[in-house]
Amino acid sequence: MRLAVLGGGGFRVPHVYKALLSDPDHGIDEVVLYDTAVERLEPMRQLLLQMSGAAAGPRIGVETELDRAVTDVDFVFSAIRVGGLAGRVLDERVALDLGVLGQETTGPGGLAYALRTLPVMLTIAERIRERSPQAFTINFTNPAGIITEALQGVLGDRVAGICDTPIGLGRRVAERVGVAPESLELDYVGLNHLGWMRRIVLDGKDILPELLASDLLADFEEASLFGLDRLRRWGAIPNEYLYYYYFTREAVQSIRASAQTRGEYLADQQSRFFEDVVGTDDKIGLWNRTVTARSGSYMAEVGATHASGHEGENDPEPEDDGYAGVAVSVMRALSRGEEATMILNVRNSGAVNGMPDDAVVEVPAQVTRAGAHALPVASPDLHQLGLMQQVKSVERHIIEAARTGDRTEALRGFAEHPLVDSVRVAEQLLVGYEAAMPGLFKPA
Image (cartoon, rainbow, N blue to C red; front, side, top):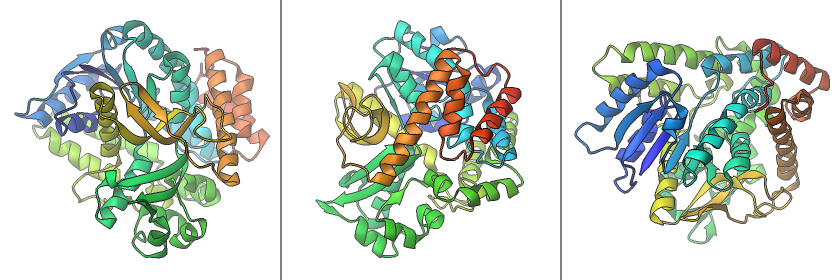
């Protein structure tokens, strides 16, 4: 089988290849790296070859033509960044200059990112449908929920979005209580980067209440972000990105006071990495050190302690390894018929009461040869459902704006977002993003 990796020169690609090397049953014979950043493809290929060593890893090819990259492939893994990290910095700074959250996927920064990414991704989806109609697309391109929902308009159920955050939480809980991750049944509901872990079931018993009552989770990132006492009162563990909703003022103040935004930090770091990787024989060592530093700085601008405990010197097993493992598990279940249940971004199809059937939600899903399908979950409470509905409405305005080039739809999306506190600010945001990124509104 052939796997096309879109964004094949990206810094995170080795996570995917490492996951393939660690799973001999994946069935992938060839990995095709596609990227428009030609100068990054060969260094990345060399790094992956060094990673495989004497192991019989999948063949690695590089491609700069999209049509050739997605022809006759069985799986597509999408992790592109339209506009690069320079675009991410603009997403952050335009919002921060107006006193509202500047973040890659959450709030107005995420909406701007979606507006310039959706037309490109919809074009890619058309090419996949034409060149490899049998292929299954695994989307990690952010903002993953919006992108996945738009892709489903072209590819139907042959696409699912992945995010390691809820699965990573379950994995960390399993480690803490000393059981295998597959022993736990995770009750999670939400949208991408907006969800809640409501139950963690072991041997038929929900162990979350006693975990929260104890101090076993006291050093978890979520306890650091939200406060363990608040988690106990809520009786649930929010996705870490809900910090931006629950502590908006504090987050904006902290990010504005930081010397660099997250995008600026990563732009500097990755620039140095791609300069250095060409001239070093130890490409894996350089990548590992860079990953460890990156992992240790995750959400540092709001004072968080990284969930994996990385602070620059530990063995690098960061959040990115999680999504790569999920991607390989999805491919294995689809190709080999090994049924699996995992939290994915998939079509609702009645799984979450109060959400449209065709909305993409982030819930436990069953993956079989037939595809990935949402499993029914208990109804969200009023707060959860209200926030999900409001953000889903925003997402749909943004998808329509990108699809048609309708600026009014974009303005409605910005104005309705709960992290944009004024219609006038929404108007200023849109003007700011248009000035920073000319041609933002070109219909897909």
